[in-house]
Length: 351
Image (tube, rainbow, N blue to C red; front, side, top):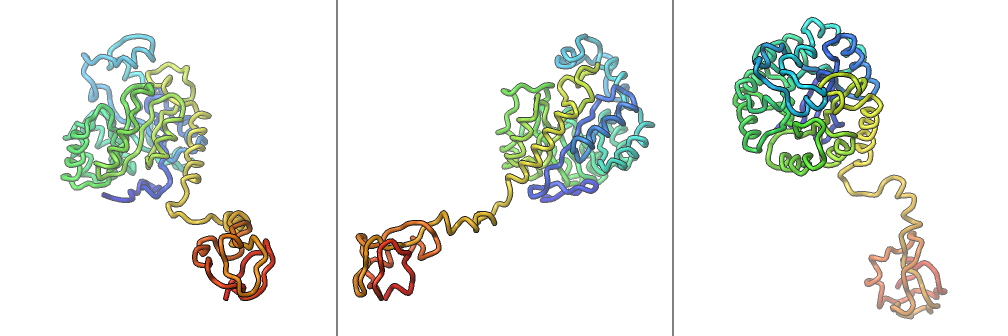
């Protein structure tokens, strides 16, 4: 497994800052101006990358394809997938302007390759630093092999998948010569109810799959995303919208900019809190140790030649004398001089 994968200016790995992707998805409603505003919103909210989707409707669906239940609910109406998708298709000629805006805002631009081999080739022509493959194509092994041959990192959604399918996906990509893989645990339901999140499955993926593991969050709020980070997710993806009340299939299950920023800020704070894996005193603790720890002290007046016993020595603060670890060793030793009660015992007091 690649311990660290480079995507643009960022490194993704277990010991690296969490890679935060703002999923612009189709929340631009097919408009360039809204796509550019989403880029700005993602940058202002603290994302590392903004992701859209690359496809054309005829390549992606047949005329017979129906809408998912969540799409019907979020749109408040029923139509064909093709009719819905035509309205939110992001034209290929828009991407140069989006790329320029992303570069200006120091954001990495990504795009999910939907719609088969042609979509993968379009993403490649755009010069984007990685491929994102959505959950619906995780078992689309011909597409995975085709994308893998370009040698770029692949971020793969895993909604609707079994472990056996994920292992086969990894095998296919590696057979094509690509081991730069990040898999995102997720549930393909928008929004995802709490009882379908199954974060323990993400931990199983970390144990059983020899690739980097992250989480794509489709829940309301950011509690689950931050929980995933504490469990070790190296990448977090979450939908971003300018306004949840806009018309479109994904707006209602997305975060508005202030919500996304709260999530990103929380993740960065978690990274600080998680800190170092090495157990040792923190700098501030070293200044407190002498006060909070204890030393061996006299609990009675001791004359020269007396033996130290449980009746004349004990353990009290401060901690700038002989540490309590030496208590048993000192018992039975002889006093080198007279020592008054309630004094910190020193090595020079012991014969």
